[in-house]
Amino acid sequence: MHSLWNTSGRGWALIHRRLLVGLLLAAIVPGVAFGAAPQVGTIQGQVTNGTSGGGSVAGVQVTLFATNGDNSTTHLTATADANGHYEFKDVSSASTSTYVIGLSYQEAEYYSDAQTFGDNETTKNVDITVYDSTTDDSAITVVSAHTVIFLENGGLAIQELYVFANMSDHTYVGTLDNATGARGTLRFALPAGFADLQFGGDLAATGVMASDTGFVDTAPVQPGAKQAFYSYAVPLKSGTYTYSRKIDYTTLKYSMLVQGDRVSVKSDNLEAAGTTNMGTAVFTNLTGGDLAAGSTLSATLSGLAVAKKASPMLWIGLGVVVVGLGLVCLYFVRRKSPVAASAPASADEEERLLAAIADLDDDFENAKIAEGPYRAARAKLKAELVELEKAKEPTAGG
Image (tube, rainbow, N blue to C red):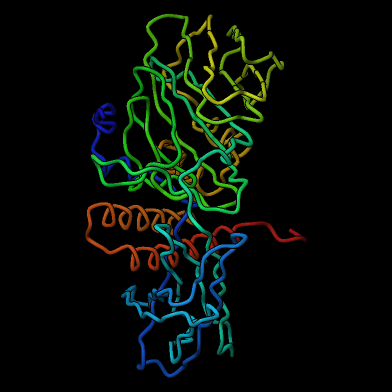
């Protein structure tokens, strides 16, 4: 394998800082001061196997990760009984305490959403569904894929968004890579000459490794949907560029947007679908569908006039209208754009939370914090960020 990170000229830590994990995958939660807090409660729940005819969950070890108001983290463990029931008694029910339930089953990790006790609430029921694992990826499908190509900084800046679906009732854990000791799951092909690779969506930088054709995610794929968002740059040496890469999974719906009102785009896989206006920019739109796994997607772009720099608001518009990744795209835009510098004072707290999440991601990537406390702490910060975003939304009468 080649070194994926050196191609961008930046260290892994810097790329990892640019993640905006939203949908993401692991919320981190605040812990509790066990035994010391005046308010105590119980967290309990049921571990269930969602695979038809799946294995027993009796005896599975369940871990309660907790973070309290001063961001200190701790954890407790319990064993599920014969029926999959678990229980943690006498934990802090203070509003400053946040929790995540985690467990490992058949080489896949499962985590709950962040949990906090409400006013006068003394019991939290947190059920977790696990699935039997498989190394067969035949049930993995790309429901929709989007490629957005910008003219920027003497080259092309490309954003890719995929929505995957695991149509089975098994968790796909991939195949073992003997060189790294990790299991590769979702594969992503990249065009030749790519640089400045960055991740978002459900892609976690600490779980991504290089491959001969691009990169591979190592996170298990549970039944249901999963988003993957990443961006990269390619050099542009003339007014013509051929975008070409392998289709790794059957793709039901695909769209491509290319910036430039005088750009011509031709493809054997895609059909012209008019133009799309975003702000002052015009994008040529192509669509396609039912792309077979193993086929090659190719599009020739001509008439490219290289722009010195893309409009910051253009990133925001595309992030919201086209990519639709919410906070993930927001974080990505703020890392790329000078717009954040002129944001109102109310954005200061948002920037602080985003910076805290980025620092926490760095610590996790550099093995300065274990996964459980990391998830717990991240969940708390993410919850604060979500509440901040809700507070910014206009009221019904406003």
